[in-house]
Length: 93
Ligand SMILES: [Zn+2]
Ligand SMILES: [Zn+2]
Image (cartoon, rainbow, N blue to C red; front, side, top):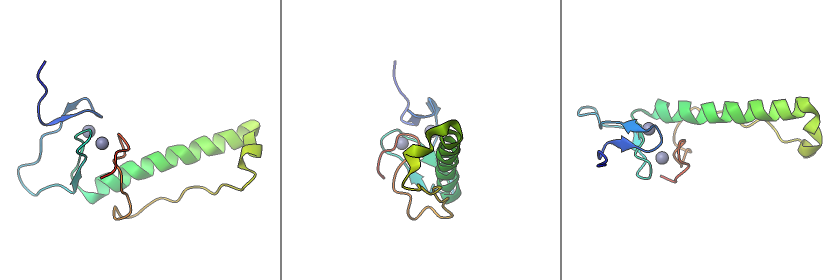
């Protein structure tokens, strides 16, 4: 099997590089394309929401002793400046 150079190993499909307008960032590990900064921010915040939901569930399930340090909810981001890794494969940019 030959793999397209546009193949994204996180999404398991080709993600063709847009021919106009450029892209915000490309993960060179898995090939995922974040076309806009907002794409990266959204992907990051989705993960954060999931982690916070998971923490809330575990607290509700009686695992609050794991949070004796008072682990705060993780903050969402509004810009991609401080997001330094691919949200799909966790590889550093
Ligand atoms: Zn990646
Ligand atoms: Zn992808």
